[in-house]
Length: 403
Image (cartoon, rainbow, N blue to C red; front, side, top):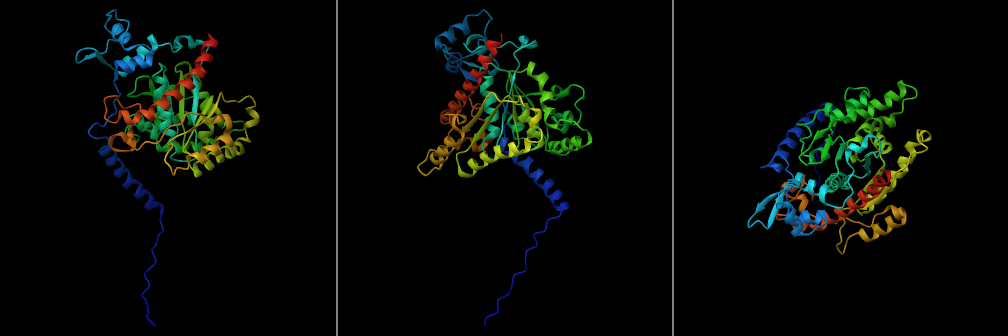
Protein backbone atom coordinates (compact mmCIF):
# COMPACT_ATOMS: atom_id res chain seq x y z
CA UNK A 1 0.00 0.00 0.00
CA UNK A 2 1.43 3.34 -1.10
CA UNK A 3 1.00 6.08 1.46
CA UNK A 4 0.37 9.49 -0.07
CA UNK A 5 1.26 12.68 1.74
CA UNK A 6 -1.67 14.93 2.58
CA UNK A 7 -1.39 18.59 1.62
CA UNK A 8 -2.05 21.08 4.42
CA UNK A 9 -5.51 22.67 4.32
CA UNK A 10 -5.69 26.21 2.99
CA UNK A 11 -6.81 28.71 5.59
CA UNK A 12 -9.32 30.96 3.81
CA UNK A 13 -10.30 32.95 6.88
CA UNK A 14 -10.53 36.67 6.19
CA UNK A 15 -10.62 39.16 9.05
CA UNK A 16 -12.06 42.66 8.79
CA UNK A 17 -8.57 44.08 9.22
CA UNK A 18 -7.47 42.15 6.14
CA UNK A 19 -10.41 43.51 4.17
CA UNK A 20 -9.38 47.03 5.08
CA UNK A 21 -5.81 46.31 4.00
CA UNK A 22 -7.03 44.79 0.75
CA UNK A 23 -9.26 47.80 0.07
CA UNK A 24 -6.27 50.12 0.42
CA UNK A 25 -4.27 47.90 -1.92
CA UNK A 26 -6.92 47.78 -4.65
CA UNK A 27 -7.52 51.54 -4.35
CA UNK A 28 -3.91 52.14 -5.36
CA UNK A 29 -4.23 49.54 -8.12
CA UNK A 30 -7.48 51.10 -9.39
CA UNK A 31 -6.00 54.59 -9.54
CA UNK A 32 -2.95 53.34 -11.44
CA UNK A 33 -5.14 51.34 -13.84
CA UNK A 34 -7.46 54.29 -14.42
CA UNK A 35 -4.54 56.56 -15.20
CA UNK A 36 -3.20 53.96 -17.63
CA UNK A 37 -6.53 53.48 -19.41
CA UNK A 38 -7.22 57.18 -19.73
CA UNK A 39 -3.70 58.15 -20.80
CA UNK A 40 -2.59 60.24 -22.56
CA UNK A 41 -5.75 62.33 -22.06
CA UNK A 42 -6.83 62.01 -18.43
CA UNK A 43 -9.87 64.21 -18.95
CA UNK A 44 -12.77 63.53 -21.26
CA UNK A 45 -13.50 65.93 -24.09
CA UNK A 46 -16.73 66.39 -26.00
CA UNK A 47 -16.93 65.36 -29.68
CA UNK A 48 -17.04 67.76 -32.61
CA UNK A 49 -19.61 67.69 -35.40
CA UNK A 50 -19.33 68.06 -39.17
CA UNK A 51 -21.68 70.01 -41.42
CA UNK A 52 -23.50 66.84 -42.45
CA UNK A 53 -24.14 65.88 -38.83
CA UNK A 54 -25.54 69.33 -38.06
CA UNK A 55 -27.79 68.99 -41.11
CA UNK A 56 -29.07 65.63 -39.90
CA UNK A 57 -29.65 66.85 -36.36
CA UNK A 58 -31.56 69.90 -37.58
CA UNK A 59 -33.37 68.06 -40.40
CA UNK A 60 -32.14 70.48 -43.06
CA UNK A 61 -29.83 70.10 -46.04
CA UNK A 62 -26.04 70.34 -46.11
CA UNK A 63 -26.25 73.45 -48.28
CA UNK A 64 -28.67 75.12 -45.85
CA UNK A 65 -26.20 74.62 -43.02
CA UNK A 66 -23.42 76.05 -45.16
CA UNK A 67 -25.52 79.07 -46.11
CA UNK A 68 -26.71 79.82 -42.56
CA UNK A 69 -23.21 79.32 -41.13
CA UNK A 70 -21.64 81.81 -43.55
CA UNK A 71 -24.53 84.29 -43.53
CA UNK A 72 -22.66 86.41 -41.03
CA UNK A 73 -25.62 87.82 -39.12
CA UNK A 74 -24.45 86.40 -35.80
CA UNK A 75 -27.63 84.39 -35.24
CA UNK A 76 -25.91 81.02 -35.45
CA UNK A 77 -22.39 79.80 -34.63
CA UNK A 78 -20.40 79.68 -37.89
CA UNK A 79 -18.22 76.78 -36.80
CA UNK A 80 -14.72 76.40 -38.15
CA UNK A 81 -14.02 76.03 -41.87
CA UNK A 82 -12.05 72.92 -42.83
CA UNK A 83 -10.12 72.40 -46.04
CA UNK A 84 -11.82 74.19 -48.95
CA UNK A 85 -14.53 75.53 -46.64
CA UNK A 86 -17.28 73.27 -47.97
CA UNK A 87 -17.11 71.33 -44.71
CA UNK A 88 -17.17 72.97 -41.32
CA UNK A 89 -16.73 71.61 -37.81
CA UNK A 90 -18.80 72.62 -34.81
CA UNK A 91 -18.24 72.19 -31.10
CA UNK A 92 -20.86 70.42 -29.00
CA UNK A 93 -22.05 73.75 -27.59
CA UNK A 94 -22.40 75.15 -31.12
CA UNK A 95 -24.23 72.03 -32.30
CA UNK A 96 -26.76 72.34 -29.46
CA UNK A 97 -27.41 75.99 -30.35
CA UNK A 98 -28.12 74.96 -33.94
CA UNK A 99 -30.59 72.33 -32.78
CA UNK A 100 -32.33 74.77 -30.44
CA UNK A 101 -32.63 77.53 -33.05
CA UNK A 102 -32.96 75.73 -36.38
CA UNK A 103 -34.47 72.27 -35.90
CA UNK A 104 -38.19 71.57 -35.77
CA UNK A 105 -37.79 69.92 -32.32
CA UNK A 106 -40.13 71.66 -29.90
CA UNK A 107 -38.09 73.66 -27.40
CA UNK A 108 -39.38 74.67 -23.97
CA UNK A 109 -37.65 77.84 -22.76
CA UNK A 110 -36.62 77.32 -19.15
CA UNK A 111 -37.87 80.79 -18.30
CA UNK A 112 -41.43 79.52 -18.76
CA UNK A 113 -40.90 77.02 -15.94
CA UNK A 114 -42.12 79.51 -13.32
CA UNK A 115 -45.41 77.62 -13.43
CA UNK A 116 -45.53 74.73 -15.87
CA UNK A 117 -44.31 72.55 -17.40
CA UNK A 118 -41.78 70.99 -15.05
CA UNK A 119 -38.83 68.89 -16.14
CA UNK A 120 -39.25 65.14 -16.03
CA UNK A 121 -37.46 62.60 -13.85
CA UNK A 122 -36.49 59.25 -15.37
CA UNK A 123 -34.90 56.37 -13.51
CA UNK A 124 -32.88 53.53 -14.99
CA UNK A 125 -33.29 50.48 -12.80
CA UNK A 126 -32.23 46.83 -12.86
CA UNK A 127 -31.26 44.22 -10.26
CA UNK A 128 -28.69 42.53 -12.49
CA UNK A 129 -25.22 44.01 -12.77
CA UNK A 130 -23.71 44.28 -16.25
CA UNK A 131 -27.03 45.20 -17.84
CA UNK A 132 -25.66 48.40 -19.46
CA UNK A 133 -27.77 50.43 -17.03
CA UNK A 134 -25.17 53.13 -16.35
CA UNK A 135 -24.12 53.39 -19.99
CA UNK A 136 -27.77 53.65 -21.01
CA UNK A 137 -28.29 56.47 -18.50
CA UNK A 138 -25.37 58.45 -19.91
CA UNK A 139 -26.42 57.79 -23.51
CA UNK A 140 -29.94 58.98 -22.71
CA UNK A 141 -28.51 62.15 -21.22
CA UNK A 142 -26.26 62.78 -24.21
CA UNK A 143 -28.93 61.91 -26.78
CA UNK A 144 -31.50 64.18 -25.13
CA UNK A 145 -28.99 67.02 -24.85
CA UNK A 146 -28.38 66.74 -28.60
CA UNK A 147 -32.09 67.48 -29.01
CA UNK A 148 -31.49 70.79 -27.26
CA UNK A 149 -32.46 69.65 -23.77
CA UNK A 150 -30.75 70.58 -20.52
CA UNK A 151 -30.13 67.43 -18.49
CA UNK A 152 -29.11 66.64 -14.92
CA UNK A 153 -27.81 63.16 -14.14
CA UNK A 154 -27.87 61.96 -10.54
CA UNK A 155 -25.55 59.10 -9.63
CA UNK A 156 -27.02 57.04 -6.80
CA UNK A 157 -24.71 54.05 -7.17
CA UNK A 158 -21.83 53.93 -4.63
CA UNK A 159 -19.68 52.43 -7.41
CA UNK A 160 -19.92 55.86 -9.10
CA UNK A 161 -19.60 54.54 -12.65
CA UNK A 162 -21.87 57.26 -14.02
CA UNK A 163 -19.68 59.88 -12.36
CA UNK A 164 -16.71 58.33 -14.17
CA UNK A 165 -18.56 58.56 -17.49
CA UNK A 166 -19.14 62.23 -16.72
CA UNK A 167 -15.37 62.69 -16.58
CA UNK A 168 -14.91 62.70 -12.81
CA UNK A 169 -12.39 60.61 -10.94
CA UNK A 170 -14.86 59.17 -8.46
CA UNK A 171 -12.45 59.01 -5.52
CA UNK A 172 -10.20 61.94 -6.46
CA UNK A 173 -12.68 64.58 -7.63
CA UNK A 174 -15.68 63.63 -5.49
CA UNK A 175 -16.19 63.74 -1.74
CA UNK A 176 -19.25 62.56 0.20
CA UNK A 177 -20.23 66.24 0.53
CA UNK A 178 -20.60 66.46 -3.27
CA UNK A 179 -23.30 63.76 -3.39
CA UNK A 180 -26.96 63.55 -2.35
CA UNK A 181 -25.78 62.30 1.06
CA UNK A 182 -25.70 65.66 2.92
CA UNK A 183 -29.29 66.27 1.85
CA UNK A 184 -30.34 62.77 2.90
CA UNK A 185 -28.87 63.50 6.33
CA UNK A 186 -30.44 66.96 6.61
CA UNK A 187 -33.27 68.11 4.32
CA UNK A 188 -32.87 71.66 5.66
CA UNK A 189 -29.25 71.93 4.54
CA UNK A 190 -28.38 75.21 2.85
CA UNK A 191 -28.70 75.05 -0.94
CA UNK A 192 -30.41 71.66 -0.92
CA UNK A 193 -29.53 69.32 -3.77
CA UNK A 194 -28.91 72.23 -6.11
CA UNK A 195 -25.73 73.02 -4.17
CA UNK A 196 -24.40 69.56 -5.12
CA UNK A 197 -24.76 70.07 -8.89
CA UNK A 198 -21.55 70.15 -10.96
CA UNK A 199 -20.98 70.89 -14.63
CA UNK A 200 -19.44 68.24 -16.87
CA UNK A 201 -17.30 68.12 -20.00
CA UNK A 202 -20.53 67.73 -22.02
CA UNK A 203 -22.41 70.98 -22.69
CA UNK A 204 -26.01 70.62 -21.54
CA UNK A 205 -25.33 67.92 -18.94
CA UNK A 206 -24.77 68.55 -15.23
CA UNK A 207 -24.21 65.91 -12.57
CA UNK A 208 -24.69 65.20 -8.90
CA UNK A 209 -21.95 62.59 -8.52
CA UNK A 210 -21.66 59.52 -6.30
CA UNK A 211 -19.17 58.32 -3.73
CA UNK A 212 -18.63 55.02 -1.94
CA UNK A 213 -19.97 56.57 1.26
CA UNK A 214 -23.44 56.79 -0.27
CA UNK A 215 -23.94 53.48 1.50
CA UNK A 216 -24.47 55.58 4.63
CA UNK A 217 -27.98 56.41 3.40
CA UNK A 218 -28.92 52.76 3.87
CA UNK A 219 -28.34 53.12 7.62
CA UNK A 220 -29.61 56.65 8.11
CA UNK A 221 -33.00 56.39 6.41
CA UNK A 222 -34.29 53.34 8.35
CA UNK A 223 -32.88 54.81 11.56
CA UNK A 224 -34.82 58.03 10.98
CA UNK A 225 -37.94 56.01 10.33
CA UNK A 226 -37.62 54.47 13.79
CA UNK A 227 -36.68 57.70 15.54
CA UNK A 228 -39.32 59.93 13.97
CA UNK A 229 -42.84 58.50 13.75
CA UNK A 230 -44.40 59.52 10.46
CA UNK A 231 -41.04 60.06 8.72
CA UNK A 232 -41.59 59.13 5.08
CA UNK A 233 -38.16 57.89 4.06
CA UNK A 234 -39.23 57.22 0.48
CA UNK A 235 -40.02 60.90 -0.25
CA UNK A 236 -36.64 62.46 0.63
CA UNK A 237 -35.21 62.51 -2.90
CA UNK A 238 -38.51 63.53 -4.45
CA UNK A 239 -38.65 66.61 -2.25
CA UNK A 240 -35.02 67.45 -2.91
CA UNK A 241 -35.35 67.16 -6.69
CA UNK A 242 -38.56 69.16 -6.95
CA UNK A 243 -36.87 72.62 -7.22
CA UNK A 244 -34.50 71.26 -9.87
CA UNK A 245 -37.41 70.42 -12.17
CA UNK A 246 -37.59 74.17 -12.91
CA UNK A 247 -33.99 74.21 -14.15
CA UNK A 248 -33.75 71.04 -16.25
CA UNK A 249 -35.78 69.41 -18.99
CA UNK A 250 -34.75 65.99 -17.72
CA UNK A 251 -33.33 64.59 -14.51
CA UNK A 252 -31.93 61.09 -15.05
CA UNK A 253 -31.12 58.89 -12.06
CA UNK A 254 -28.74 55.95 -12.22
CA UNK A 255 -29.21 53.40 -9.44
CA UNK A 256 -27.27 50.49 -8.00
CA UNK A 257 -28.35 46.91 -8.87
CA UNK A 258 -30.43 46.54 -5.71
CA UNK A 259 -33.62 47.70 -4.04
CA UNK A 260 -31.92 49.85 -1.45
CA UNK A 261 -33.53 52.67 0.54
CA UNK A 262 -31.92 55.18 -1.80
CA UNK A 263 -33.17 53.35 -4.87
CA UNK A 264 -36.69 53.19 -3.43
CA UNK A 265 -36.46 56.96 -3.05
CA UNK A 266 -35.51 57.22 -6.72
CA UNK A 267 -38.33 54.93 -7.80
CA UNK A 268 -40.86 57.04 -5.92
CA UNK A 269 -39.41 60.30 -7.31
CA UNK A 270 -39.41 59.19 -10.94
CA UNK A 271 -42.00 60.05 -13.58
CA UNK A 272 -40.90 57.18 -15.80
CA UNK A 273 -38.68 54.12 -15.75
CA UNK A 274 -36.25 52.62 -18.26
CA UNK A 275 -35.00 49.10 -17.65
CA UNK A 276 -32.18 47.98 -19.95
CA UNK A 277 -31.77 44.21 -20.14
CA UNK A 278 -29.25 41.95 -21.83
CA UNK A 279 -31.31 39.17 -23.46
CA UNK A 280 -29.85 36.26 -21.51
CA UNK A 281 -31.57 33.80 -19.20
CA UNK A 282 -30.32 35.07 -15.84
CA UNK A 283 -30.85 38.70 -16.81
CA UNK A 284 -34.45 38.03 -17.74
CA UNK A 285 -35.16 36.18 -14.50
CA UNK A 286 -33.49 39.00 -12.57
CA UNK A 287 -35.71 41.56 -14.29
CA UNK A 288 -38.79 39.65 -13.17
CA UNK A 289 -37.44 39.44 -9.61
CA UNK A 290 -37.17 43.23 -9.58
CA UNK A 291 -40.93 43.65 -9.82
CA UNK A 292 -41.70 41.05 -7.16
CA UNK A 293 -39.24 42.64 -4.74
CA UNK A 294 -40.41 46.17 -5.52
CA UNK A 295 -43.99 45.13 -4.88
CA UNK A 296 -43.08 43.41 -1.60
CA UNK A 297 -40.98 46.21 -0.11
CA UNK A 298 -43.37 48.96 -1.18
CA UNK A 299 -46.34 47.44 0.69
CA UNK A 300 -45.33 49.26 3.85
CA UNK A 301 -45.75 52.70 2.28
CA UNK A 302 -47.75 52.31 -0.93
CA UNK A 303 -50.96 53.21 0.94
CA UNK A 304 -49.60 56.74 1.15
CA UNK A 305 -48.91 56.83 -2.60
CA UNK A 306 -52.29 55.91 -4.09
CA UNK A 307 -51.87 58.45 -6.89
CA UNK A 308 -48.34 57.35 -7.81
CA UNK A 309 -47.94 56.48 -11.49
CA UNK A 310 -45.28 56.31 -14.18
CA UNK A 311 -45.72 58.01 -17.53
CA UNK A 312 -44.17 54.89 -19.03
CA UNK A 313 -42.18 51.81 -18.12
CA UNK A 314 -39.87 50.75 -20.92
CA UNK A 315 -37.82 47.57 -21.10
CA UNK A 316 -35.08 47.94 -23.71
CA UNK A 317 -32.96 45.04 -24.87
CA UNK A 318 -29.30 46.01 -24.79
CA UNK A 319 -26.04 44.40 -25.89
CA UNK A 320 -28.06 42.12 -28.12
CA UNK A 321 -26.03 39.36 -29.76
CA UNK A 322 -27.46 38.53 -33.18
CA UNK A 323 -25.15 35.55 -33.72
CA UNK A 324 -26.38 32.09 -34.67
CA UNK A 325 -25.86 30.63 -31.19
CA UNK A 326 -27.28 33.59 -29.30
CA UNK A 327 -30.01 33.13 -26.70
CA UNK A 328 -31.51 36.49 -27.69
CA UNK A 329 -34.42 35.10 -29.82
CA UNK A 330 -35.64 32.88 -26.98
CA UNK A 331 -35.28 35.51 -24.27
CA UNK A 332 -36.89 38.12 -26.53
CA UNK A 333 -39.92 35.85 -26.92
CA UNK A 334 -40.10 35.42 -23.13
CA UNK A 335 -39.86 39.18 -22.64
CA UNK A 336 -42.61 39.78 -25.19
CA UNK A 337 -44.90 37.39 -23.32
CA UNK A 338 -44.10 38.81 -19.88
CA UNK A 339 -43.77 42.53 -20.60
CA UNK A 340 -46.06 42.91 -23.63
CA UNK A 341 -46.15 46.61 -24.59
CA UNK A 342 -43.57 47.51 -21.94
CA UNK A 343 -40.96 45.86 -24.17
CA UNK A 344 -39.70 48.44 -26.64
CA UNK A 345 -39.10 47.47 -30.25
CA UNK A 346 -35.78 49.36 -30.34
CA UNK A 347 -32.80 47.17 -29.47
CA UNK A 348 -29.15 48.12 -28.94
CA UNK A 349 -26.75 45.60 -30.51
CA UNK A 350 -23.62 44.34 -28.80
CA UNK A 351 -20.29 45.89 -29.74
CA UNK A 352 -16.79 44.90 -28.71
CA UNK A 353 -15.32 48.22 -29.85
CA UNK A 354 -16.36 50.20 -26.77
CA UNK A 355 -14.64 47.79 -24.36
CA UNK A 356 -11.17 48.28 -25.79
CA UNK A 357 -8.48 50.81 -24.95
CA UNK A 358 -9.33 54.41 -24.18
CA UNK A 359 -12.92 53.94 -25.35
CA UNK A 360 -13.70 51.88 -22.24
CA UNK A 361 -14.61 55.06 -20.33
CA UNK A 362 -16.65 56.49 -23.22
CA UNK A 363 -20.05 56.07 -24.82
CA UNK A 364 -21.00 55.91 -28.49
CA UNK A 365 -21.92 59.61 -28.31
CA UNK A 366 -18.42 60.57 -27.18
CA UNK A 367 -16.86 59.47 -30.46
CA UNK A 368 -16.44 62.10 -33.18
CA UNK A 369 -17.19 61.09 -36.76
CA UNK A 370 -13.48 61.45 -37.55
CA UNK A 371 -12.59 58.63 -35.13
CA UNK A 372 -11.54 55.33 -36.75
CA UNK A 373 -14.23 53.44 -34.80
CA UNK A 374 -17.10 55.82 -35.64
CA UNK A 375 -18.56 53.74 -38.49
CA UNK A 376 -18.49 50.56 -36.42
CA UNK A 377 -20.30 52.32 -33.59
CA UNK A 378 -23.02 53.87 -35.76
CA UNK A 379 -25.11 50.68 -35.60
CA UNK A 380 -25.05 51.00 -31.80
CA UNK A 381 -25.56 54.75 -31.71
CA UNK A 382 -28.54 54.98 -34.07
CA UNK A 383 -30.93 52.88 -31.94
CA UNK A 384 -30.07 55.07 -28.95
CA UNK A 385 -30.72 58.22 -31.01
CA UNK A 386 -34.09 56.77 -32.00
CA UNK A 387 -34.90 55.81 -28.41
CA UNK A 388 -34.07 59.32 -27.17
CA UNK A 389 -36.35 60.72 -29.85
CA UNK A 390 -39.14 58.41 -28.68
CA UNK A 391 -38.75 59.51 -25.04
CA UNK A 392 -38.46 63.19 -25.94
CA UNK A 393 -41.49 63.18 -28.22
CA UNK A 394 -43.63 61.80 -25.37
CA UNK A 395 -42.73 64.76 -23.19
CA UNK A 396 -42.58 67.33 -25.98
CA UNK A 397 -46.27 66.64 -26.55
CA UNK A 398 -47.01 67.10 -22.85
CA UNK A 399 -45.02 70.34 -22.68
CA UNK A 400 -46.65 71.71 -25.83
CA UNK A 401 -50.12 71.00 -24.46
CA UNK A 402 -49.24 72.61 -21.14
CA UNK A 403 -48.38 75.96 -22.73
